[in-house]
Image (cartoon, rainbow, N blue to C red; front, side):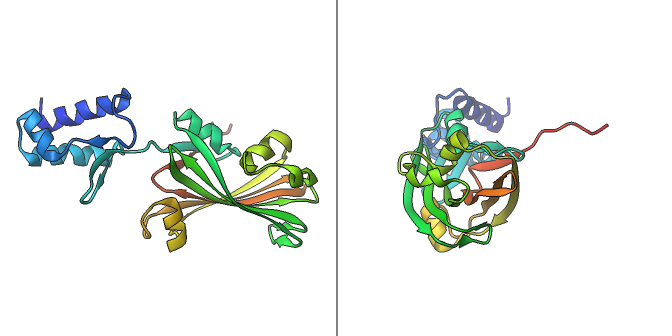
Length: 226
């Protein structure tokens, strides 16, 4: 077998079997070259192919690490991030930053509203930033909810039925502050999901979630029409 292919396949097998976990450091090029009895250029080619496939992440001056698996979400649903992250075998945590009672809310959620800011964590790392408005005229019980222990999206899905939703999805460059909060580079691509949900024509909530582009993608499966 081609040496580069052998290295690539054996490392990929270790990652897919769970022997090497997300965040684990991959042996250095020198160590792999000695192990396989080949040139560093051969190892570099194998690692480059693994990086292109998304299995490893090469960090300048830091080395090569097993990549975090991207979380997939269906475009046509309102997902619970806690469930999505847990399904990937990662520990989920919600970190509440602030809760504010606003008399006027915002354009997409007018009237009295709760504004909630927080961070969704996956495997101990920032996964998404969230700013959410909950319409208190439609969901007054939100005033008594404990959003320090339960993410507002999870609470809403468990308590308030919705009848209509609208997604707006766009690629964005995070601000310096957002990039720092997500532990990513200032020029890194992020995915912004802007969603409003209604119940019987009345706004329930409006949320903006900002995801690291390397950790999340949106998937839709559907059949052709007649």
